[in-house]
Length: 99
View 1 (cartoon, rainbow, N blue to C red):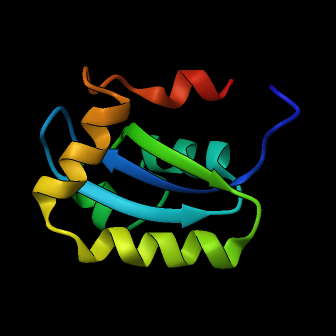
View 2: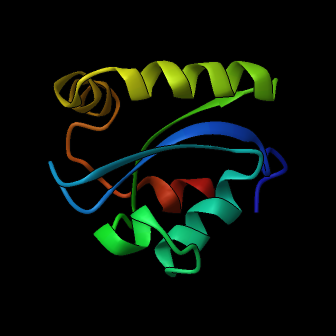
């Protein structure tokens, strides 16, 4: 595993390309995505099958990450989808890139 992990990040999980989206924030992206993928976290992502990491942005400060998460959550779905497609037009699972 890279020395850059864990790190604070805002992230978007999806159930599939153009599927259900979940926006979250964490201080350990690698661990948190693993928990979503394995269904270890009860709630929205487990219920809706959001197991694909399609977008993330790292931050040095948790306060800035939380602010960005709240901003993204306020935007409409079309804006979130454009955010994903700007970074990840194929909607690839980015989890492997974290290793």
